[in-house]
Image 1 (cartoon, rainbow, N blue to C red):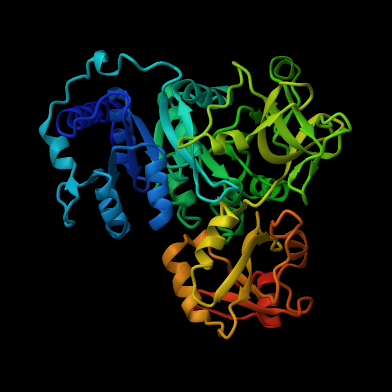
Image 2: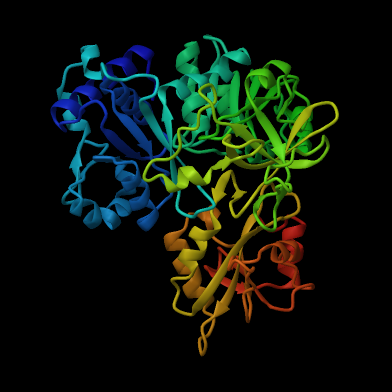
Length: 544
C-alpha cells in the first residue's frame, strides 16, 4: 500500500470528522489505539491531532489485566482496535462495557457483539480540511500521546507526551541530517516512542518518505532496503545484532542506506555491522520516553551514547550519582545529600527538573510520578528526575550506558517488569511464591527472564500447565525461559526479594543444586534443564 502526503492528509480529515460527528469526540478527549504497524495507525493519529485529542498507544502484545490497566489509566473514552486482535478485545469486553467505553474495530464490519466498525463511518464523511476551532485550545503543554513504559512498579505506566515534547523529539532527525529526499525504514513498533516520535514525526518534519513494515524480519531487511531505495534505517541494539547474525550474502553491501539512527547498540555489534554492511553513519542517542535528558553520540565514537557537551552542561543540570544496586537507592553523605561519582565510575543518571527540562509524569495518579523524582539531591529543595539508568563518563568525557537499576530488565528490545511477570506466574495453583529476575546469556543483548519458585506444600511441579499459563498471559519476551525451584525465597530486611545472588548464579546446572527447568517452545512445556541444553545455549545452537 502506497500513500502520498495528500492522501494521508485527506484520510486524516475524514477520521477527525467521523470521530467528532459519529463518535461525539471533542478536543481534550483521549482515544486508545490497539493495533500493530499499518498505515491506518498514522492517519488515525493525524486525525486525532486535528481534532485536538490525545492518543494512547497500547502495546499490541498485552492482554487481560495489563490491557485493561493501560486503557483505564489514560482516561480514554474510546478504544480503536485492529480486527486481528479480536480475541484480546473480547477477553476484556465485559469490563470495558461496564465503564461505558465505546469500542470500534478499524475495519468496515464487526463480528463481535458490542463492538462497532469504524472505517465505514470514515468512508462516508468529507475529506475537507478541519477547522482550527476544533483544536483551538491545544497548546504546547496539551497531552498529545500516552506511551507506555514498563516500570519497576509492575504494570506499564503511561508517560504523558505533550506537543512540546513531540517537537523536541523530532530535533534529533534534523540534527543528523535527514532530508526531504530520504527514505526512512522503520520496523520498530509504532506504540513505542522511537518509531512514533522519531520515525513518523521526523519523516513529516523533513518531508521524507516512510517505509513502514509490520514487524522486523532479519531475512527481509536488506531486500526491503533495496526494493524501496531506503537511505535511513531505525534500530534498537538487538536489531542490528540480528542482522549481523543472519547468513552472509554476496550483496550485503548493495544498498543505498547512508544513516542508521537508534539506541542500545553495543560496541562489538557496531564494529561488525560496519565491517559487513559498509559505510553507514551510525547515530546512537540516549533518551527515555518520559525522561528530561537526552544525549547524542555526534562524534560517532563506537560504544558511546554521547559526550559531555559544554553548552548542554551549561543549560541542563545533570549528574551521575553513587547508587547502591543492592539497596536499590542512591547513596547519601552525612548531610543527607547525594554524591557525584568521579570520571570512570558508574553512577545513576539524574537531571534537575526545571522549566527547560520538565518531567510531565505519568497518567493515572501521582504515585508513579513521585517515585521518579529525587528530592534534596545536592541542596535542600531541589528536585531531580531519576532516570533509573546507570551510566559512566570516561576521562575523555564520552558517556557510556551501563545498565538499568532495579527490577526492570530488557530482553529483545522490550522492558520486562519482574513484578508483573511474578504476579502472572503466581496465579498457577502449585506456586506459593515467585521471584523474577533477568540473567545474562553469552552473546545476547540485555537479560533473559528467570523465575525462582517456591512450591506449595503437597503439590507437584507441572511443566505443561505452567507453560500454557505463561503462553496465555505473557508476551513472548516476558516469559521466564528458566525456572529454579527453591525451598525458601530469600528476602531483605525490608521484605524485598533478594535477587543479586540469583542473578550472579544464572542458570548453570553444574553450579546450581536446585531443580532447574527450561521453557521448551517445541515441546510446549518446561523441561528439566540439562548440561546439553546449557551447552547448546552457550554455543548458540539453541535459539532463545
